[in-house]
Length: 385
Image 1 (cartoon, rainbow, N blue to C red):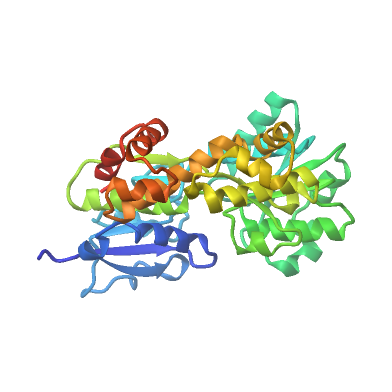
Image 2 (cartoon, rainbow, N blue to C red; image 1 turned 120 degrees about the vertical axis):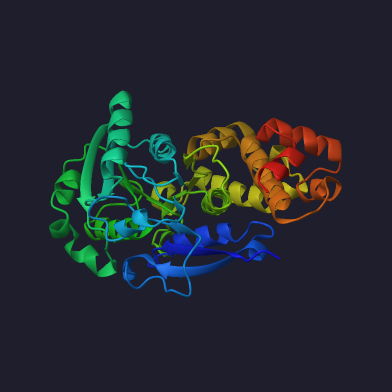
């Protein structure tokens, strides 16, 4: 048996998204038979102490900015393959990152659906994505005729900073006081979004009626916020598994189909910080939960509407406005996600997978999968293994 490939994972450890990525990395079938892993905290390792003579990696999965002032810039000089899991300007390493164009599109669509008249982007001061995301928001806001602002926030904020946030971020009070209508705030981190939420409420603004706040990563901070924070959902599991596939190809001398790939977001997890308690919006939230719980049973839009006891036309219109998809599209999306997971993580034949995603007939499942994924289930399984 060949010796296992040694994989170093160099991620942040101060929030939970890296652990979601690791779950994706480890989800690949048979990976443990091929690879051995060690994890190193991004901001605590130094060039001279990270690896030992006894343990040198065959490949590295990292989250590094690739800027000249990056303390982990030494990684780029190592003579081993590296795959980066964040977007960078320089593209020094092969990478798979979130598609920030789709992040901004999702945020703008959501703010438009809840009738925000102004947008504030709460960016990370000095962050490598600050200019990119600012430009994307500014361009889209100009096209829609929406007043736009950008303010830079420190990387690290915690709950105690809410009391002094206007001194930490000069200009924040002015933006809020001069807003001529409902303002939507997008934060690149849920924790920052939670601090902004606490500050806004202390200043006497109503969330979400006057200020709607949207975070990113769908983390614990989003769920524990009061009101709960709506959040952009990234494809962490698929991003992690794709990164591992890319790295293994590099280690074994294979070509990459795409050196710097991006992955679109899943959409917005709608919560109280942007929709409040409006009856129709709450029904949308209930419907999304029902779809995720029962898509594998073959649930239909008619069944959802009957259970919620709402007007189908009103429900479909509001669902599409808040999620960017129709209820039928949401059902197909969830079923496809479940099908892909079964194909990638099990060796079950299609006759057994089909009923697990709501199809009693194998042929109907194959037609559905090819239409939605662009390839047959068998081809998908082969391509991703």
